[in-house]
Length: 179
Image (cartoon, rainbow, N blue to C red; front, side, top):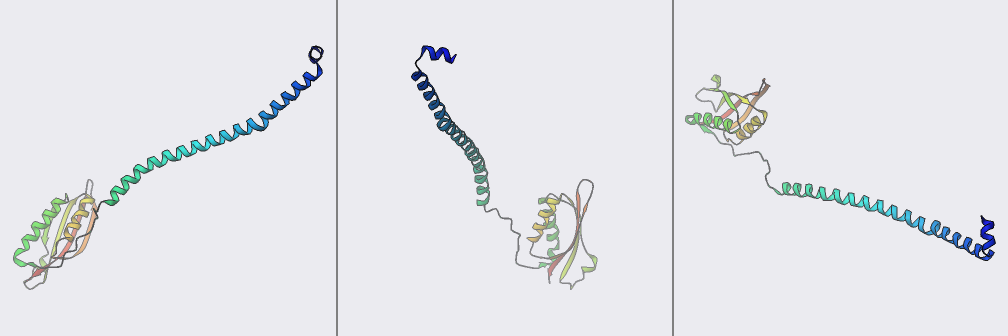
C-alpha cells in the first residue's frame, strides 16, 4: 500500500505526513495524556473534598444540638440544706414528707417504721426503717429528695434487691430530733 501511495504522491508529501502524524502523536502523549491524568486526579480530590464538606455539614447539625444542650444550665446538683432538728411532736411530718418524696419518685412505700430501740424520751435522734418498691431510677430520685430534708442526719444502711419485676430498697435513716 505504501508503494501505491508512494507512486501517486511525491516523497516529500509522505515524509511531511509522517512528520505531522508524529507531531500529533507526540502532542497527544506529551500534552493531552498528562493533562487527562491531572484532571482525573483533581476530580478525585474534588470528590474527596465534597464528601468531607457533606460530612462537616452533617456534623454541624450535631454540633449545634450539643452546643444548645451545653448552653442549658440544667445542672444536676444535689441538695445540701443547712442541718436542723425536727421537733418531737412533728415526727409524723417526717412520715408524710417521706411518703410524698416516694410518691414523687414513683416508688411505693411498703413500710416506714421507727426503730423501737431509739424511741427513748431523751434521745437526740430517731431511727427509721423503710422499705420501698419500684424502679432503680426512682430510687435515685428518692435518695436525692431525702438529701433535701434538713433533719435527716444520715442514712445508715441501704439494701437494694432485684425482685422479679422491680427492685426493693430497704434503708435505715437517722432523724435529728429537737427537745
